[in-house]
Length: 285
Image (cartoon, rainbow, N blue to C red; front, side):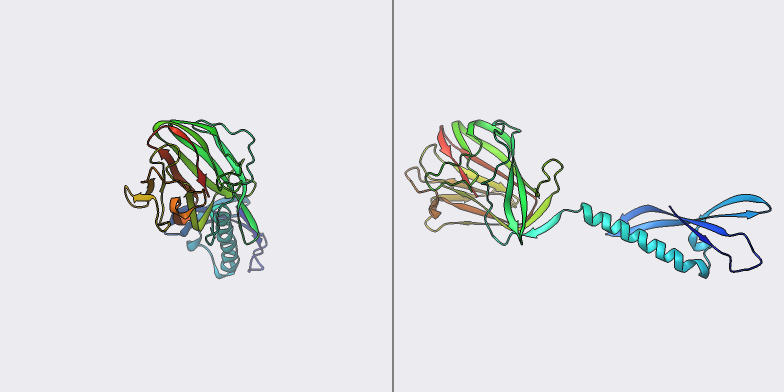
């Protein structure tokens, strides 16, 4: 509530009048803020103090309108700034790869619900953003290393590289949430535009018919002469399964790589899986 004191325009009316403006949010419709503002006037009359609560439209004179409009504008600006401060940012990645080389959790839990915060997974115009990787579910698998950064078979620290022992046909579901740098304790979400997300080394070494699956994608690509089959269960879903059990490729070989694109997203949901038992380090970037 804002209180303003006016001197009367009539010099014969000696007492000053105090007016308070009370603005209440009524509704938000199609992005338009709808407020109702009241004028509370208090003045002495017949040596008694009285309070009046009435809609401003019925009582404001031209003398008060300018001050009232100024106050209402300040109120609207305040609501606008509050809205901007709590809205998720939307930022263009411009196709650059994610970087998982800086995990902030030394020993993440290896079962469903386990999480790891990664610092500076992407830099946009000099500002870094973080990611929180979460294990959503596990079926017929044991994760032996949340993220194996050993430099072998094309792997390096920049990949998200879960090491998995598959005990049969199964899958592991993950989610990756993007947040402002340093806000993992109280996450501030960001939307990344023009983002590409890839799975590598989906070859025939180890368990059979390994696959990578993602939801919410707007596009996908596979390499030329690919060993992968593409399938989908509906809009935004993309699944890539190795179709050649004899294929043996280096981790960075495009024939065993699949990429999905996201026009705008704050969270990536994906699965890795296999059709049989075996040990494998999965490469995600």
